[in-house]
Image (tube, rainbow, N blue to C red; front, top):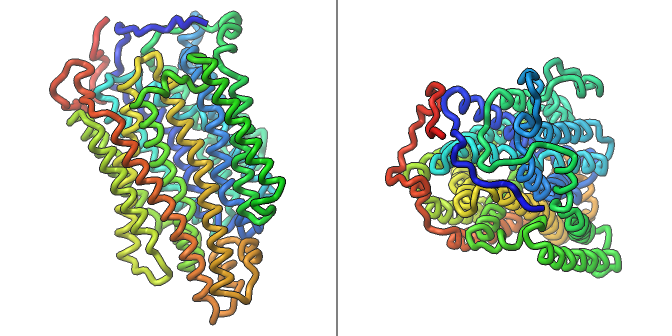
Length: 577
């Protein structure tokens, strides 16, 4: 299909109340995704104890991110070929704006909420993982869609500060997640951690009723309704929605590539999971078969993608650009460090220090708050100074140092130390969090924004799903060996089955052997953060290829000042057709 998309400079950027409304609605939906990344962390130790499923820890996050990764490229294609607003795609005549829904966008949000409900009613670890898969499928189109709309709504040189506002404010979900998750897990049940998404998104929340879930208006629907009142500019012109357009677009979605990628990823994660969890030996025919199957599918996928060229799920020409592929690597490293730490920091506070879920949620706030403050500050700094590379490089270095410092935590680490080291780690992640998005937006033409951003988020989710399973493998293997050394009276499998909750860990051994148990947990966590140090160092090297570019020159400006009163301006446009 030949794309009819072309850059339309006559599109007018948003200012005043319309810009404020768009920013608010996009922040609402990205808040949900951010909440999901952190609310499970403090609940995981209790979940592993209830389901006797410590080897499944990697899947609670990995299933979500893998499912999200599988649909990321397809969501990018959808946002490329179809208007982000149904009102732009259909001829609706005099129909009231209240029913002009963003069908694609809202569908992703609905899937996300449905997955959350499935998690809340899960009766086993496997059922919980299925719910996480459904939620991940929904999340796949949320951040990409939000960033695509934002890219068309504001001038490119001002995009960093607005991206920082949306992502930074949405990351309040990361701040609230551990607190909410810990409190619900300790004083009610961990199941409310997943059902809380439905609570937050329900106007008359009777979460026990399936009918109520379908009837009540989710927060994503509220956000889409708000956007319906805002004429979000399209950076490229798009055809109206017709059946013939669907027939033309389907071949461009690369569904065959999709069917090759999914089994390859699943077999890879299964091989890591089954081998590390003790279910099968690493040299068993099952694990070896999974490795071989993953490799064959991966080779076929690469061959097919190369053959499809520009129609590929992951276009080779696009990913071949140095700025694009190095940005993908960089973003993957930073998000991997954040997501993996969000799992294992609560485990440290609960298993090693003996804190409850609520306290562990409070204790991880130093890293989250420092990340939140820095991500907003660096967005404004890039808009003013024009260069993103220094911040990307600095972010990678500080993240590596921060993870290295956290790896020294033991049962006797002082409060001042664990607070200070977490602040360093969070500041590093915040410094680099949005730099890859800024780099990619300034490296590709507007017609490629959706696919480029989808590819970026795709690699973030894919790398995270693999990394959390690898981290879980490192933890489980180290714990198995150190338990044998420090607490020989107990079976390593019994420790894995018990989970990582504070009471479960302490119930396994008599008081005189507890020090050995805590030492084994500390060393296992230390090796996980060693792994993250290596990931952060890779981010440092990747940042060097992201390009030293002054993004202010895109619009011919030599000054980088960003006028923040645009949010408060009246309906004047910054550009006239």
